[in-house]
Image (cartoon, rainbow, N blue to C red; front, side, top):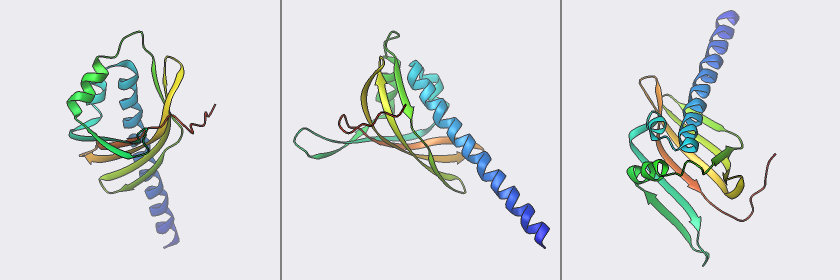
Length: 151
């Protein structure tokens, strides 16, 4: 009985760890496409019905929630100038999984041409579409104040 429980525990741990690595890989691949201005790479990581939102506080101190269309997002990425260097530095991953749904929290710092542009948090929702983790929802916060640089 103890051996069966131990084997089940080890198998469950390995399965969850493998799923977390696949989820991280999906997110890293998404950002590879963003950094390179390559929408073909991004499209491999997103669901066809991707939802995108951004939250921020405007100059008057009012909280804003902005929706972005997937096609507009992809167009802005494809229009990135080749000489511009975008780097979104993910500080850590907090991953929660239940069956075919995953929620990922990733604080970040965003750099343009080596200078800190803004920071915040990404909240990803991913769907396991028959073995392939796809981003179905992405909302982020963006701020220019209070960004701690982590080296």
